Each structure stands twice: as structure tokens, then as C-alpha cells.
Image (cartoon, rainbow, N blue to C red):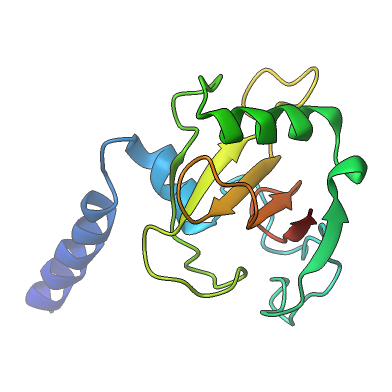
Length: 156
């Protein structure tokens, strides 16, 4: 009994410590696509509107949004991505793992995430743009306004 408890503690600590990296726990939460502030009891219906039974966006069910339909702050974020910054937040440009597979599958390191400012917010808010491919490329980008629960592909 004691060895089972000890083993459970070791596994839990490994999971916790294994996620601690350069950017700290916020970076790990973001990169995984998880949201600590989102209630698991209420499925979030975000940018695409297509949800699975668990409340997650169905794979391959991405909607689209034009650049003109995005909030003005998103247009500014896209401009900063295209010129390589400087970005307003230190975590902008970090790896996005796509672990929930809400975006098309690509090798690790393909996607990077950037903050879209939210007027009146005292923190980074929930809006992000995730772009794939080489840095400064904005041809394969996705917008989320619900902290990675759903995405819309940004159409040219």
C-alpha cells in the first residue's frame, strides 16, 4: 500500500516538474492548449462553433475568418509577426504544441503563438494568433478568442 502511494506521488511530481521549462507553468499551459480559467463543466463554444461531446472543437472543423473580420488588435499582431516583432509580451512567439490536435497536424516546432491584445484587460487575455511555418510567415495562421478552445483559419 505504501509503495503504491509513493509511486503515485513520484508519477505526479514527474508530471508537474516535467512541465516546468524556460517559460514557467504559464508557457506549458499555453503550449498545450489548456486553459486553467475555463470551466470544464461548461463546454466553450468559440470561434468555430463545432464542438465534440467533451466541449472541444472537432478536428478538421475549422471555420475561417478574413483579416478584415478580425479585431484591430489582431491585425496589429499579424503585422508584428510579419516583421518579426518586437512583441509586447515575452511569451509571444513561443512554441505551440497543438497537443489537442485542433489545428492541422504538423511536426513539433511548426506552430508558434502570439498574443492579441484585449482592450481593458490587465493581463494577456484569451485572444491569440497561432501561425505555422517559418517565423515572419503569416500565410498559415489561426485566430482564437477563447484561449485555444477553438480556432478559425485566417483567410488571406
